[in-house]
Image (tube, rainbow, N blue to C red; front, side):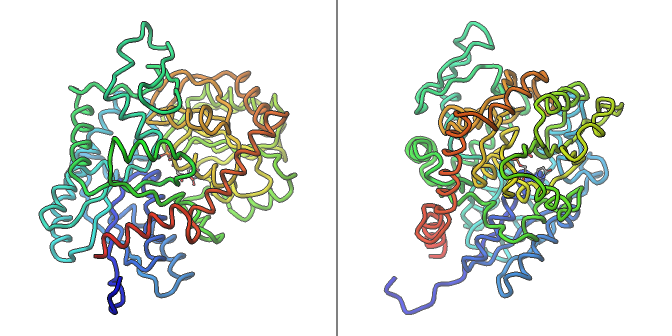
Length: 483
Ligand code: UDP
C-alpha cells in the first residue's frame, strides 16, 4: 500500500502427502494460488507426478500464462524398505490384513523423511516465499526454518474435526465412560456434540503412531500457521474456536474443489477414472433431476465382500437409481455380487469398479443424494453440490465429520456406523442401507434437508467469489507472505 511498485510475484511451494485425499486438494490449491497471480510449485514423486501432470496441463491450457509446475523428488522405495512402486498409500490400503496395513502405514510415514535433504536443497536454491507442506511431514518445519522460509501446515480436513480432536486431547472424556459405546458430549466444543469412544481413533501416545502424531503436533505449533480447506460460513463457531484456542494463525480458502470449473478439469481430478466420463454423464442425463443416489467411500476405504453384498441388497430393496463406486479389499477376491444383481438393476444402477469422476457426478442435476464415508474432500464436494447425504464414516477423522453433517448442518442421515474400523468400516446391514437412502431422498424431512443443503452450496460459491470469506482470507495470506 502506498508504494508505486507492482506487487512482487509470490512463490509458493506445495508438498502434499502421497495419498489422493491429500494430493487432489493440494493441486486445487496450487491452481488457486496461480490464478491469483502466484507462482506455484508442487513437489511429488515420479509415479505421482504422472497422475498430476494431466490435470496441471489441462489447467495451463485453459489459463495460458499462469505459473504452475511440478517438481519431482526421488523416492527410492526399495532402498527405503518399501515394495517397488509404493509411492502412494493406495498401494497398500486395499490390504485387508489390518496388522500388515498398520505396519506399512508407519513405514510409509517414516520413509518420507528421505525427502528432507532434497527439500532443504530446493529451499536453499529457490528461496520461495512460503512452503505449504502436509501435516504428515513434521520434519518440514525444521527444514524450512533453516532457510527462513515460513512453513504452513495443510491437514486436508476442516475446522470442526481439528477442534474436536483438540478438545478430546485436552479433556480425554473417553476415559470417563463406562463402556466404549456410551455416547458423551465433547467437552468445550461448541454445539454439544455427541460421540462415543468406539468412533474415534484412540491413538496410544506411547505407540509408534502416537509418537509420530506428537511430532506432527509439535511441528505444527512451531509452524507459521495452517491453511484450511473450508469456508467460514460452513463452520463459523469452529473456525472461531480454532483461531481462539488451537492455532491462531489460520487461513480458510475453500472449498477447493470448486476451483476446478470446466469438464476437463473436473474429469481430471485424480486422473484415473475407470469409466468414460462422457458415457457416465450421458447415463445421468437420462435420469430425472434429483433421482440418483451416488455411493462412494473415497480412495482408502475398501469393504469386504460381506459388506458389498449388503450394499447391493439394500440398493436393490430401495429401488432407486444409483451410481456405486466399488473399491475392493485385496485378498478378498471371490464373487461378491449377488447372483443376477447386475442384470436386475440394468439401466437403473451403474457400478464403477475403481475410480469415478466424482465431482462431475455430484454436480449433475440427476444426482439427488450422496452416500459418503465423510472424507473431508468428499464431504465438501457434496456440500458444494448442494446435496443431502447418507453419512457412513469408516475411519480417520470421519466420525467427527459425520457429526458436523448430522448434528450441526443437519443435511444428512446417519447410516448407523457405530465403530471406527480403519479401511473396512463397521458392518452395516442391508436394512439400514435401504432405510437411510430412502430417508435422504424422499419425504418432508428430506425436503427440509435438501433446502439446507442448497443454501450451503450457495454460501460455498459466494465464499470463493470476489469479496467472499475465502477470497478475502486468501488475499490476506497473499499480502502477508508477499511482503
Ligand atoms: N475421488 C474421486 N473418485 C473416486 C474416489 C475418490 O474423484 O472414485 C476423489 C474425491 O472426489 C475426493 C478424494 O478423491 O476429492 C477423496 O478424498 P476424501 O477426503 O473424500 O477421502 P479419502 O480418500 O481421503 O478417504
